[in-house]
Amino acid sequence: MASPQRIESAMREAIRQGQGRGVGTRTRLAAALDYAVTPGGARIRPTILMSVAMACGDDRPALTDAGAVALELIHCASLVHDDLPMFDDADLRRGKPALHRAFSQPIALLAGDSLIVMAFEVLARAGAADPGRALAMIGVLGKRTGMPFGICAGQGWESEEVIDLSAYHQAKTGALFIAATQMGALAAGQESEPWEELGARIGEAFQVADDLRDALCDEATLGKPAGQDDLHGRPNAVRELGVRGAVARLDDILAGAISSIPKCPGEGQLAQMVRAYASRLVPAAARDRLLMPGE
Amino acid sequence: MASPQRIESAMREAIRQGQGRGVGTRTRLAAALDYAVTPGGARIRPTILMSVAMACGDDRPALTDAGAVALELIHCASLVHDDLPMFDDADLRRGKPALHRAFSQPIALLAGDSLIVMAFEVLARAGAADPGRALAMIGVLGKRTGMPFGICAGQGWESEEVIDLSAYHQAKTGALFIAATQMGALAAGQESEPWEELGARIGEAFQVADDLRDALCDEATLGKPAGQDDLHGRPNAVRELGVRGAVARLDDILAGAISSIPKCPGEGQLAQMVRAYASRLVPAAARDRLLMPGE
Image (cartoon, rainbow over the protein chains, first blue to last red):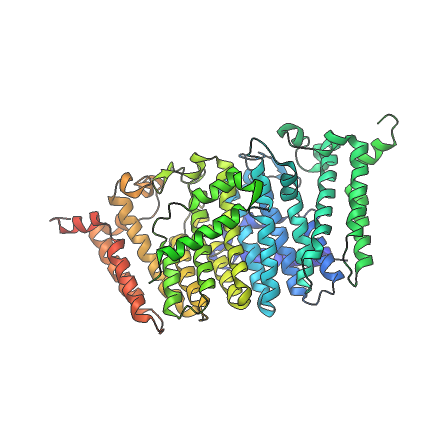
């Protein structure tokens, strides 16, 4: 299994490099870089990336680490930008004030920009020993972050009068999970294509689980405002299928994810990881509701 | 000399790729990508990059093109983000409404993010034939864009109570000119280090010229609001040295730039290019003022 210590240590080193030495380390922007990535939360995307790389042999661990860090930096950047008043106007993130509340909007925008850039820099730095693999990882990360298929495109759909729901979900939530499985495979010298479906299905599962959490949990449990989808009129699996239907859908998706895992040395362990996520993904509140009569 | 047609054609192709095919091409974000990079203005950074690559032999023209595009995309992204109300609150850019005025703030933020990502993607795509060179170019572009040495760091200084003027200028204006000379050299298979000074000096010259324009030109000539430095209390060479002093300083810097050009096949032509910029950089209004008695 991928280890949280391995991810955190690689994250700390990347932030330290981004903060630099000397006078620049004392700036508010340098402090904001650290604030944006701590505390870490579940680090679910880098964990998946690392698990896939390990299932494929992990023969270039420095590239795996760089991939995991790069992906998490992009994810953190998207949270910082999405929390801004012009989007979600969130006060809280991971149980503490959102970055633009703790610092300022300009610093939040620049921290997000800097984290995006840092993601690609981390891969460029780690790639010297195998530029071909690193470049392929950069290509995948770029595709799943920017336009027209990445999380930027996904967020962009929220500015359209008519939303293409399938494109919206795939880009907004699915993209970084596809990046996770594909970059993990690339880091270990495998082709990326066979790993797209696993990432896409994990992304779908995560979206449904998020909808369940958003519908059932309170602010204290989430560490961020609850009921945001209802508030913003965003599509939501619980509204469409009910709690019981959404949980059944989640189980279906995860079964599909497991059967999509490509042949590789660590295939069995990877299936186990997905199963472990399955039980963690469904919030206890949802399982409780399923046991109640009449739901 | 680098040709404007070569740069524009490479820019168009990158934007077309970013807009994608199918439903996503009709989104506001897709339209904003094109809006952000047109009309092109002087394309001074990609022109310098291409000129250096050509002076060094330009043996991988696809990499040179990708480098030029990537650098200009980063520059355009920085203009879009800097124009937002939380920074300069600019109404005009290149003679038309700033992107957040023509679209919206969310679209402007996402367009900037997407252009940043696209810059790295363009290099990853073009690099397959020579991953080592492409990766080095990505490293330089990242360093000169993000933290702690890039334009993000430069913009970040404006949020500090005490500004380190030297770090501010080097990062805010100089960084992308250093990227231009270094990426141009790398695209043609040369080491990047010997090219740092030329980029830094061109950047300094550009900053002084910008100060002259900001102090002397009106809004119609600039295509953006004039007198912004005075308004925002930013450091300015004209305020420190007067118009005559600033023009003399500009001439000094450009002489230094020319003498810093590393040995290469196209050394003479490159010196000519810098001289050509020198005469274009100083606005006519400033030269006119120098001819008036008493200034």
